[in-house]
Image (cartoon, rainbow, N blue to C red):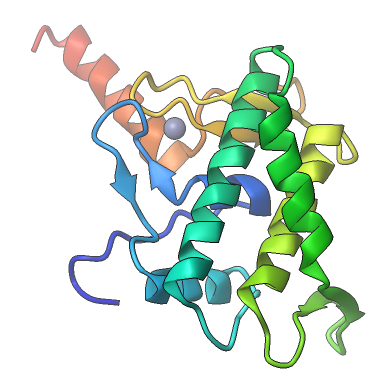
Length: 185
Ligand SMILES: [Zn+2]
């Protein structure tokens, strides 16, 4: 990572952590996987380390990311999921080929082939998106309350009352803005 590379925001849900590699979509967007090397870094961070990552792999990743973003955003506001976005997600899932492995530490890991390919890693991300879109896991998709963010996130809070994609970033900005407004600044 060079000094100029934006940091990753890692959440607990793989698919929305992936859509969160492009932030502030309605403000001044920040691309957090600007190069194949940074995509490889991100995949390593989420336990999907690959052996090589090409510009074509990066383009594929961005295609999947935007399809998940479109489908999740539509679902969060109760609209039908656009069919072409769903087709893209299903296509990546079908081409994946990763194998779930029970590791010695008791955790699930993904075997991404030899060599470990980006296609296999993206298949895991696509399958995770399908799980949250299909309601396989408890939780609901919602949109971040920050008007410059509007990121889709997976709300697993008890009363489904979470408002921000990330408490440390969007939640904090909002809190500071409110305090400034109260002080009449
Ligand atoms: Zn947000």
